[in-house]
Length: 164
Image 1 (cartoon, rainbow, N blue to C red):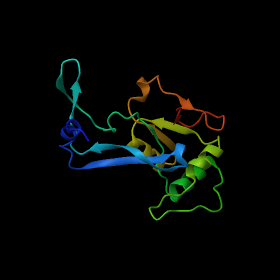
Image 2: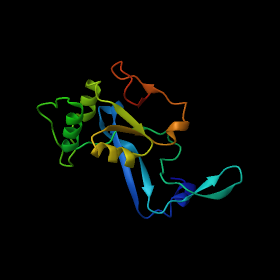
Image 3: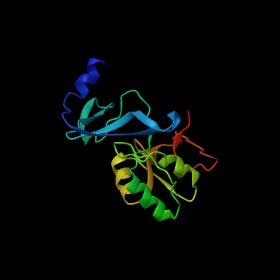
């Protein structure tokens, strides 16, 4: 790792980390993620070459494109979502030792009646999932982005899988 990156993140002692599952890799855990430092650094203004007073609340890996995050979902949240949208759950669901109910996102893709919401921050997605809504995140300022595509999933175009 370059010295510049080590210096940029040297102040971080504690942070909240969020990563999800990779739809491009059979829904295995994704290496990519974002962190929310307890004590964020201040944003750098490239025009004035000075620090601003605006904190960088979420840090993504440098020089790496943002990814859509599909959070891991425990069985009780899956059950809540199934109830909300009146969609039957599979009969046999495997739950990992970490509490993840495997197959949730495949189940969502198979049921177009379930709406999928998009938000900018993983913390918001986690909150909305606990309320029974299916949510994915795309790090960054979603409302200002026009350059990223959503790949159509099963011809329905409901899920935010970034096009290659």
